[in-house]
Each structure stands twice: as structure tokens, then as C-alpha cells.
Amino acid sequence: MKYLPTTTTATATATAAAAVLFAVFSAAATAQTCAPVEVRNVRPTQGTLMVVAYTSEAEFNKKPAAAMQLKTTAETLSFSVCLPAVATHVALMMFQDINDNGKMDSNILGIPSEPWGSSGKPSNFGPPNWAAASVALPADGKPIVVMLSK
Image (tube, rainbow, N blue to C red):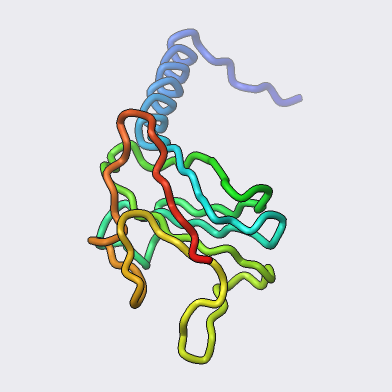
């Protein structure tokens, strides 16, 4: 018959302390801040709203800090986007995937044929860049408002 080694009280206490420290540092590493978002001009019950959020110019259009897909239940959608706690700015980009094919459709000239939008002040010509799309994370609880194209 095999015997399991016994754990001394000191070893159990050290193991418990290590687990607590790991949990504290893990929580600090994954701390987040959430910002309210309001999206207007949504076509209700048509497809899915695809949303990505970037928190730096270096990662813009490369590696989103957050991504989500939302059902389009109303003309105005409200939700929160949660980002790393160190983030001070965010650039939101989104489109309503009317036909649920997982991509933004465009016409022969490359102009989007599905509703799209971004935070900040996007240009009507060409895709948004970090300077135009980034906004400061609101400290007052007011939502970041994005208007989808018609």
C-alpha cells in the first residue's frame, strides 16, 4: 500500500501564501477599465455588429485590445468595452455585418456597402487612422458615441 506524503503546517501555509500572491499579481496583470459605448443608426434585427477596440497607435489595425460581436436588437445599442487598466485612449471601429458573412462587404470601388463607424472624427474618404479615431477614455461615465453610416 502506497502512502501519500504528509504535508506539514509550514508547507501548507507557504503554499497558501504563494497561491494568494499569485492570485493578487494575476488580478493586477488583468485589471481592466470599462467604458460605456453607444452606437446609433443600427439597422435592427439585421445581422451582427462587429466591434474592435485598439488602445495604441502601434497596435491600431493590427492587434485589438478587445473584440466583440453583438446582435442588432435596436436602432441604438449600448454596451461596455473593457480594456487594460493602463489604457488612456481607445479607437473603436465597427461595422454591421448585414448578411452575417463575417466580413465588411464593399462595392467595386472598395467603398463599404454595409453600415460602418468609428469613434473620434473619421474621414469620409478612406479608412480611419489612429489620430482620427482615438478618443480619451471618459472619466465621467458618459458614453463614447459612434454613428454608423446609413
